[in-house]
Length: 79
Length: 251
Image (cartoon, rainbow over all chains, first blue to last red; front, side, top):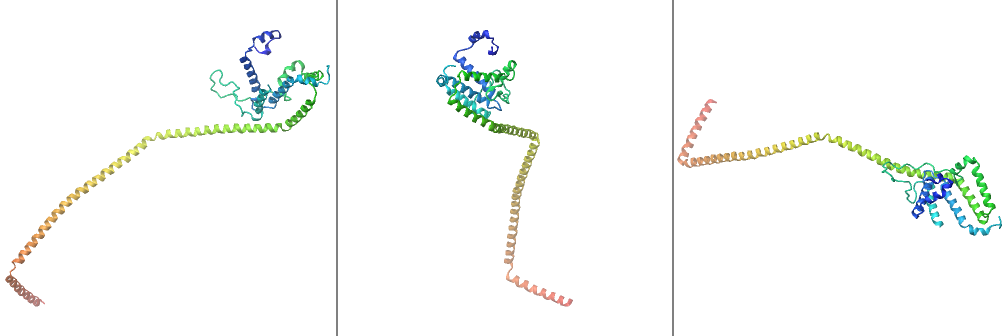
């Protein structure tokens, strides 16, 4: 069953059905990579978007990981 | 943790510029997974997924279009940005200024030279494909000439009978010639033998003749006594006188 077809109430049961073994996680990562690769990069006329989306994702993830350090640079204490 | 992402991004990065010739070989498309697929692989899709502003895939805009129309995603983006700024989830510090400068330079570079780089990459791709195609066509042409030559050889095989007839004639002629030469040799040898015999007989007769003549002459000379010699000479002189008288009388 695909994620888009799952109703909101059935989400926990659907999550329980997934394969959380290391092999399953690796398989999921590989599938995700293959989907992205075949859609944006493995084409005759690839554009800049294929690469820039990965870089933007990297920027966002690295910002999230370093947020605990950046918290101290805030201009106001209470928001 | 950031290393595998960088590595993946580097691998992905070679795609847009180099096309199908990537540095690392990936069999990402399912090759021969199910049944035995003997047909050639399907060609690559022409264009990748649509991305708007280089960052957001088009599917997101299409996903929000039925509910919010065209400006929906932009409103969502603006609202999100203001929320992040006001709650200082995104903190403005020196890094923001650096990011702004870098992004402006990158965007200026892409806007100005993007199409040229894309055309160059496409040209490289074209050359690669043209080379492969040339190799294929060359191979096809070679095979076709080979086929024609084979057919010609097969046609030549049909003329085998004529070839063998000519050869047989040649051999027969050689045999004939040889036979006649030998015949001539035999004839010459036999003739030489016979000539020898003939010459031998001739010689024998000649010798016998000569010997006989000599013997007769010798005996005759021996038998001529001196008295007979005088008598014959006197007779000869008398005969000569008579003859001369008759000749004088006639003249």
